[in-house]
Every structure is written in structure tokens, then in C-alpha cells.
Image (cartoon, rainbow, N blue to C red; front, side, top):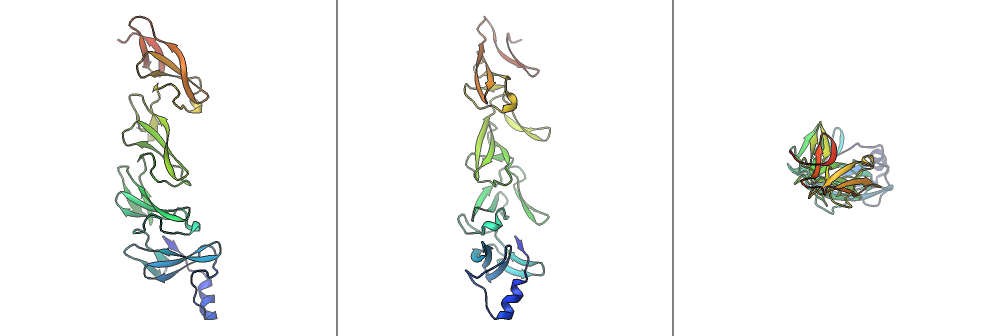
Length: 239
């Protein structure tokens, strides 16, 4: 995480005052407090935030550098630094969210990597309850491929159950959730309104209404079951 030095540094030197916690500051301003901590600006006042990574807090030609890669869950961060992140290890991102640093798992195949000066976390695979960044609104498949998840209030939550044979996965470069099989009262997307799915036992056809699956018809003729073929749902005899 990088912070540029501001003219406020020069003012502090001229006045003979050393800034500290509670001193006034401008938005985005930061200073090293010690080798392992920095002063970060929040609501016009300095607060102390840790730099637990191996490189600590240092003054560089580009400004203040605070290594947050070793920061722990619950460590304080400025709300103005929301989204600041670093790779704690190849599978974990540490990120500032709502005034605290939190670890976020990078369960996707690319894990956590530093690319072009920023931490990139592969969140294409996640589990309900995983920490996430609200601003990015990421979506992911669950580890077992049975659910499509989305970030809500800093946590990954189940949006849809992907009960069809293809489950949840990447298709044509995008996350895809197979909703051709569902349970009664499962949530369905608005764009699926009026479309159908089979029940898991293949005895009924469900219809998506008001973003929930409800019973449409039964496949109760001898030898019939609910079939999903070529994008259509119908009752018929399996070949």
C-alpha cells in the first residue's frame, strides 16, 4: 500500500511540531510513526495503524510505504484506505474493510499474487461466510460447485443453488449456474421468470415466478419423467 507525501510534512517541520495520533491531517496523508506502524489520516485526524509485514513502514522516493502483508484480523485501518490490500500468503489476501484489516481466502486456482504493484486475489471459488470486498461485488462458485455466491455486507452469501448436472462453473469465460434442476421454493433470477426446471426426482416441472420456483405440472404418465434437452424442459420418456 502506497501513500504519497503531502505538503503537510513541510508545514510540520517548519512549525517544529511532530505529528502524532490525533494531530490534524489532510485526506490521504500518512507518515511513519515507527518501523512497524504508520499514522494514517481518518476524518481529518491521524490514527495509528500497523505495518506488520517484513518491510514495515518506510519512506521511499514515491512516498510512505506501509507493508500490511503481515497485518492481523481486527487490526485498525483508516476508513479512507478501504480496499487497500496485500497478499499475506499464496492463498490469503489481507484487506482493509470498514476500518479493520481482515483476511480473505483466495480459493481460486490463481490464489493471491502481486501484479503490477497491486494484490490480485482469485475469488472465483469461495465458501459462504468468506470475507469479501463490498465495493467489488465479486461472485463465485462454491468449492463443491453446488452454489453461486455473491458478496453482501462483507461476506460471501449463497445466491442460487446450481442443482443441474453442470453445477456452478466457468462457461464461455463467465460464471455459470445450472438451474435446470431445482427444489420447490429455490430462488431463481428475475431473467428466468416464466422459465422451467425439473425437480431432483424428475417427477415434476417447476416454474420460476416472482424469483422463486413453484410447481407447474407433474410428469405422471407411465414411464415419463422431467427431461432437460436442448434448453427446453418437458415431460417425456428417456431414450
